[in-house]
Length: 161
Image 1 (tube, helix red, strand yellow):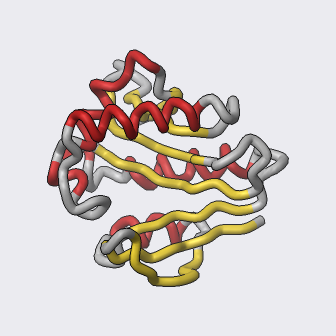
Image 2 (image 1 turned 60 degrees about the horizontal axis):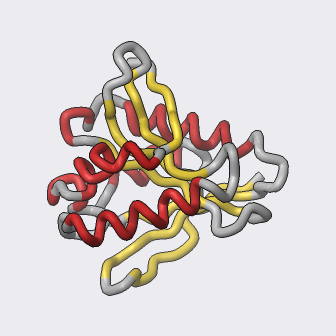
């Protein structure tokens, strides 16, 4: 399946909420489904981050053929001048195990490496998420540390160039 990335816009909240409200999807991210009011607040932050940089932010992952929604990919920066971005991805369950997350990660890494200001990426995963860890390692990330994120276990992986 060919995929394409398109920045989330104001009109795309339903796609975002479809992911974050699904407890199965969020099991290794927040360990809980996100309720609508919290998701709306998070989405406003996502839109604000998307405004920081024309090529970075939070992306809808779409099937290139029919433009159906598959998931989310992100290269999030805290400022327009940042030299590091956070890479992440979330897929709807019907797309798990098909190699799509690997393609998303590869596309995001390639996009990040084209940005003159960026020098590194980091990703935070649940240490139990072995498939995600494998995807990141295969894309040149190395494990940096294990730490607690708001009471949840996390592993931080980084890639520099």
